[in-house]
Structures are given as structure tokens and as C-alpha cells.
Image 1 (tube, rainbow, N blue to C red):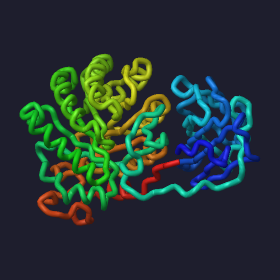
Image 2: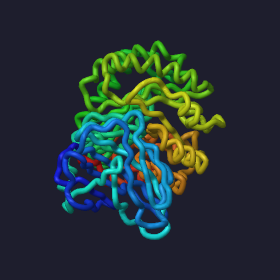
Image 3: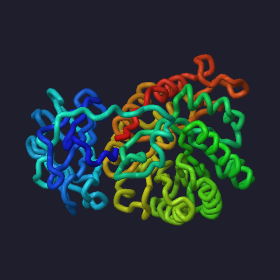
Length: 456
């Protein structure tokens, strides 16, 4: 990621193939652009653009380039203010990346449409100065190692979850069910299978607060969560610690408990690179301002012990960005939580939440860092038939937008959202077709496909 003074000054990657444009730039005025089409579908694509300043420091920058085909259009962008006039596209730096020191880089991106061909853009400029370089291929990207080995400490950059190389990534994994009910499903064999056979990037640890959960034995549940964090770490997976508030729906009911719990787990796990904190699972029957107030009291408790970890905040309407309450993401966009390194939760159940929810996510993803910390392939009750078409549409969208996700649920719960058939957790097989439900088979197939974590 940080090969800042490389021989190339401009390069473009289209569907995994990288090229650069023009002659070599001088260090005094040069810039380098890495253009990557991260995914493409019928009539559309998503591209990432990394611009590296090889000249004098700039405060305020504009990236310009030309779309080679008349049918290519920018639909929505992130980490910059995007505009297009004819074939000419401009991206203007925003508050958090507008200053570029010599050798510094900004990662921006956009989704686009096309009607003919989709060739790579040409004639990149930074503040009117041509980004030029030599025609060379970059070294191959290393892919060995576990998700944590490769990505290291995660952070939020713009609207993306980014790795130690400051490159946007997507994590794909599974959520436990309530650890008070299905603890037998979370052992060395099941987590070995999740990491090695399912090739999961993360384990979400669902610690219910009520419903025979944390409030009945704070010390015991805290210890169990920490044990699962260690087990995930040993297998190179990220651990998403979920403070699973559901009933009552106002997270402020559990404010004191949240402060106690997160002070403990943050202090204990601050030295780990694999921990993400989810501070309120599914707020419901409560206003966004109340959720925001809760978050702004809990996050400083985490930051006092662990200043670097990513924190996920639940949203209104069972973490639907308010859509399930008849609202939308604008309330969060217009009144964000006053904190950094923060993402917002979005939850869906594919048989219940369809096009209008997907439209909201597509719209919100250009303005907010989103993390789908829970979703199901079935109805919002956790039961009913799996909706394969809606699930596939959702997962395709999340892949296109590089939004991370955890599926509900890696358990043998008596509901159709469960990945395992009854009795699986009393054995040692967590991967074969004989133990997987229809939902489990679909998710294992999606999660086990190769990750493409960028390291440069």
C-alpha cells in the first residue's frame, strides 16, 4: 500500500490487470494514480482510485481524468466530492484527506455505469498537473496468511473499513447465536472448521444482555467473551464483540452495564489487532438522538483503554438505518455520532427486507461507513423458508460496495436461519453437506471463496 516513491507514477488496474500511463514524472510535480475496478456487473462497476502526491505538499486537491467511452458515467462516489461533465470527471478532496504531504496518498472511489465498453480512464491530473509514469507492472500482491495476518489493525477511512495498508476491505463471516443457549457450538473443532473450511474472516460473538444473558452473571459472560476472542485470534479471525441488546430496545436501559462491560473487555483486549466492538445490537422503539447519546457515553469508555479499535453503533428500527420505522439514513448523516473510527450497523433478513432496504443501503453507503453485523437468509423472525434470490441480491450488493457482514447464525438453533442441522454441535463435523442446512450451505459457499485483500 505504501510504496510511495515507486517507479510508477500513474497506474490503472481494471479487473485485476494493472497498467500505467505516460512517461515518468519528476518528484517535484508528480503524482501517481492506481485505478482498480474492484467488481463489475451488467451495466455497472465499482472502482477504487488511489492518488499519491509525489510533488510538493498540497492543501486542497482536485483529481481529474477522462472517461474513454461516452457510455461511462459516475453514479455515486466516496471520500471525495465527485462530478462529471461529458467525459471529464473530477474528484475534490474532503475535510479528512484534503491535505496531501509529499508521498501521502488518498483513497477514493465510485460506482459507475456503462453502456458500451468499459475501458480504463486516461489523462489523470492532480491540481492540473499530469500524473505520469512508466509502463511497468507492479509486483504481485501477496495473499498468504490469515485475515488478521494480512490486514492487521483495522480502521475506518472515509466510508470504508480499511486494513493496515489503508486499503478498503470486506470481511465475511458468521455470528454465534446467544452464547448462553448454544455454548456447545463454540469449541475448538467448530472454530477450526469456521477458520479453515469455511475460510471465515470473522466471528461475531453475540452476548445477550437480557434473556438469561450478561445481567445474570457479568463476570462469567465477560470471561466467556474473552475466551472466544482468544480462540478467534489463535485462528487468525477477527472477533466482533456484540453487546446484544434487543429487549428493551432503548440501549440507555443498559448504559451502566455497557460501561462496565466495555471498560473490562477493552482493557483486557487492547493489545489485540483482531477486536471490533459492537455497542448496541438492535435499538428499537427509540429515537436516533437517544441512540446517539448512548454511543457518545460508551465510546469514550472503550477509547480510554483501546484507542485504535473500530466501533460499530446500532441504528434506529432494529439497525435498519431507520427504514423499518419509516425513516431513512438522513437522520444519521445529518446528526452523526461525535466519534472517530466509527461504523454504523445495518441488519436485514432477506425474506422480509428487499428492494427498498437495498436502495437505502446503496444510497447510504456513499455517505456512511456501514457494517452488516447481522443478517439472515430467512424472515425477520429467524424462521420461514430461505429466500435464495433476495439473499443472493443482498450478498452481491454487499460485495460490490465492500460492506462487511456476519450471518445469523453459526448454530444448531431450532430455526431456519441456523447453519447447522440439529445435533451437529454434539459431534465434530461442522462443514460437510450432511450437517449443513440450506442456509448454512449457501453461506459456506459464499464465505469460502477467496478473499482479495489489497496490500499495496
